[in-house]
Amino acid sequence: MSNAAEGTRTVVMERVFPHAPEKVWRALTESQLVAQWLMKNDFEPVVGRKFQLRSEPVPNWDGVIDCEVLVVEPAKRLSYSWSTMGMASEVLFTLSPADGGTRVRMEHSGFPQDNDAAYKGATYGWQSFLGKLDTVLAGLK
Amino acid sequence: MSNAAEGTRTVVMERVFPHAPEKVWRALTESQLVAQWLMKNDFEPVVGRKFQLRSEPVPNWDGVIDCEVLVVEPAKRLSYSWSTMGMASEVLFTLSPADGGTRVRMEHSGFPQDNDAAYKGATYGWQSFLGKLDTVLAGLK
Image 1 (cartoon, each protein chain N blue to C red):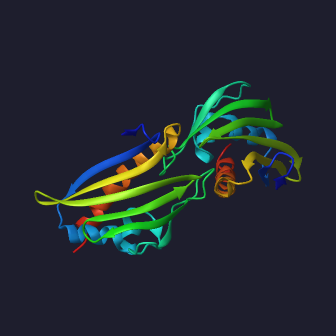
Image 2 (tube, helix red, strand yellow):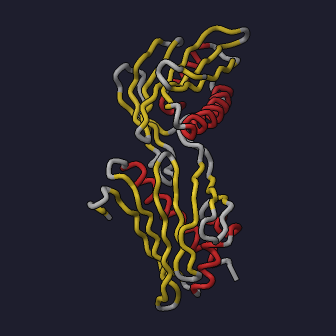
Image 3 (cartoon, rainbow over the protein chains, first blue to last red):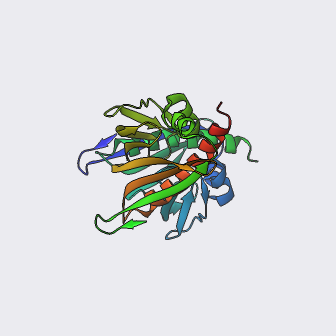
């Protein structure tokens, strides 16, 4: 998706999970669960909370993402900033009822038009993360 | 190591491997061997050859490094450019005789002073790569 006005692109993905919004919300906001599908973290669902996501370092990147919680509306919306490799972006999850479960819309915005590698990496990353989220939810009571 | 004149930093590592320079050279320049300790690649030891190193994508990076061979002096020096995440850098391997083997000096230069994450990632990466190179050499006849 392109956003010509700001010259940035947004990665958008939607998945319907066969679970109640409250359960999906737990997986999005409980640090130990987030660690299972996204990355190691010191997240807390409090607006203004600064936290880090940490993955394995790769050449030219130390694996650290600096974040700050922007929006917390239980079982409805969660947003945080996502800053790494000198690039500032934002992630927004929107939960809504769907037949047999909860629709999760993930929007990761702020990718510069000229940074195709970042956009591709995020696209690949979120496909993987949301797949693991599905697994985590399946194992959650 | 800092290079105040150009405002960049260089990752420098040295290892002595208990093998002849010709064997170390093979591990540095045969594509299938390079894939075992560094990354998947279409490298060929020919000056001017453009090739890619490819690792798994991570969020914000597609895992692709664009390279060009700059120096090929068999069993002595190998250099290639290393461009990724909008950052241009260069790698230089220098081989020299050492007691019981070959000293390999790896210099990866061109890290901007203000990009600590890139420098840290490269430091972590090369420690890992050179450790795997040691393993590859041990298994090479």
